[in-house]
Image 1 (cartoon, rainbow, N blue to C red):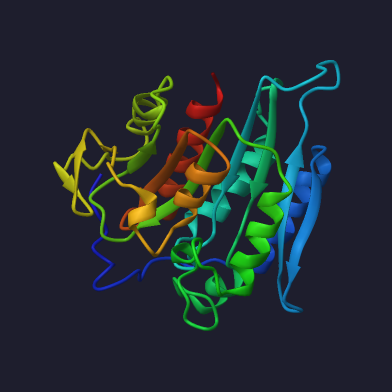
Image 2: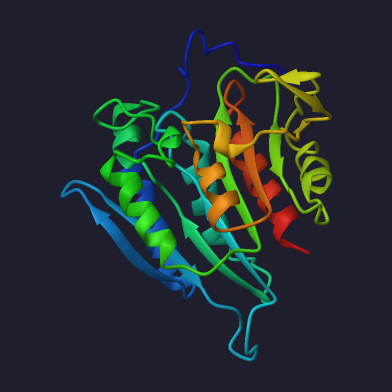
Length: 258
């Protein structure tokens, strides 16, 4: 599979009607037993989280999993992957799940990485100033700790799919499992250096101390406050949109089926 060669200096690929996508997300969630909580309403868009409890016959979940996407408005595969996962409804019955299907809807309307004020929301979790991230953090603070976090993204410069793993306690890794699932669908970025960090077989395991970095992404907030195992999953934007969607879905399914 060859790159499309569309992205010159930024994302110039397909866009989505985020209103329609989120409408379909809410329909699929309601049909399949998810509850929904709005944690911020701009008047034009609302930010909401979905929650799915494990099967009723189980008194408690074996694991709690958090999934988020749509924090960058020029990464359309994430919200579409969330929609596909909800429509397929093939979730392991032992999991309790939380899903934020789009953290920056106005960004998709603008086809912009940032929000309406030009703020990159995924750099504001240490000293938040944007109303979206302040509201998201307030919602997260009301949730329990998660066993696993999956953050769905795209990279317009990437040669293929890759992921970041944060696993400071050395728990059983899901990284290789996700790569194995995705490589059947989408090329893997086999570069030895990705985004300035050593990589191997599409896996980046950065040795970064969050306290030493002022511009926290969501992943840093999650690993310090809400979980001890987190994956930032990056689909390659210079490939067909459906390929990117399928890659993200495959990665999520590989991680949660444990």
